Length: 124
Image 1: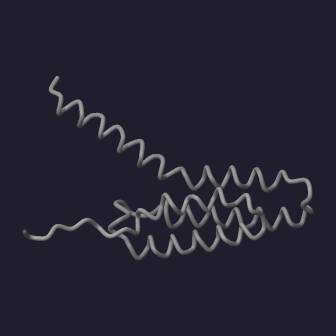
Image 2 (image 1 turned 90 degrees about the horizontal axis):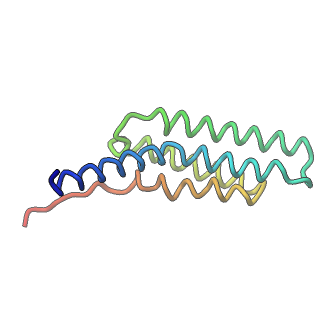
Image 3 (image 1 turned 60 degrees about the vertical axis):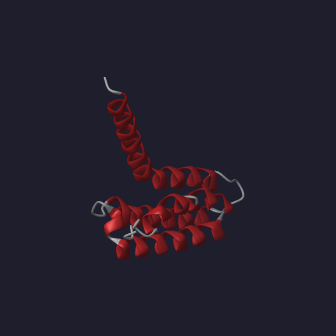
């Protein structure tokens, strides 16, 4: 086996793992944040219901605008900008209810890469 093909195989495997991670990070961080927030004993049941409704809205937002978005996502900058803005707003609202939702807000760091400008080359 040539060294170059081994390196290409490792790169392809890493790319698949990275893509799968990007798909799941929002749901994982939202679930962890929700567990921490809902298990706090000092919250009233009504407060928990409002928080859970906001969590459901956040999950629906991620599903509709991120999970279901056409690939490659970098080709759909306007959609990703709307998604990212909504993600930050929802994470901020959740964090006002419970600071543990900062874990969900971390998703923004991962998904912000979709907003970066595409690499370009200039003639030398």
